Length: 113
Length: 119
Image 1 (spheres, rainbow over the protein chains, first blue to last red):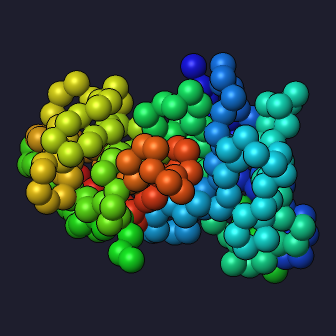
Image 2 (image 1 turned 180 degrees about the horizontal axis):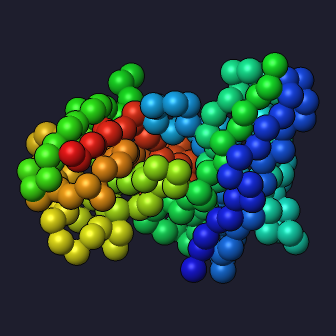
Image 3 (image 1 turned 90 degrees about the vertical axis):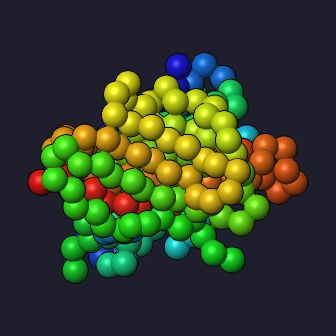
């Protein structure tokens, strides 16, 4: 069985502050892990993905995530938040060549001016 | 290159009517997935199709919902006799054929969604 848990359905940070969005996964085999971003009334856009290469993955818009097998985590970070980062962020897992991605329930990021 | 195209973007139906949502995958993609997003929830997998075949429908409700991906034309998600609980955003995603050069394992490319409101 595979699943992801995103801790914190809402996260607020000040503009310029560190962004940390948490994701823990459950998978019986080495997983592929993804972070997607969803802006209001839009579809999901891929931020970054981990596919068993480097454990520190860099994505678009200055985001990065680190795969930590010992902690079964794949937290998303960005050193300095911008107003344009306000959106919903979804962590997803695919393991064992499953037919689909399993998504977390999402974290809504608010950036305070 | 056109992305995944979904229409309509917004659809309003009264209880008991039928809703049809269409999805054209990215060029060169032969796999289509449908997900449902309820308010304040994540995306829930519904069905995975290839041309003329349903590969995995483990997330589809047992009644009223059906999906197809014909040899020609878009994939269609059909909801018969809609109820208020069907109100949601329905997202389609596509991926290239498995094993193609340059495929990122498991990555899906999403459309902008079809938002169904049932009155």
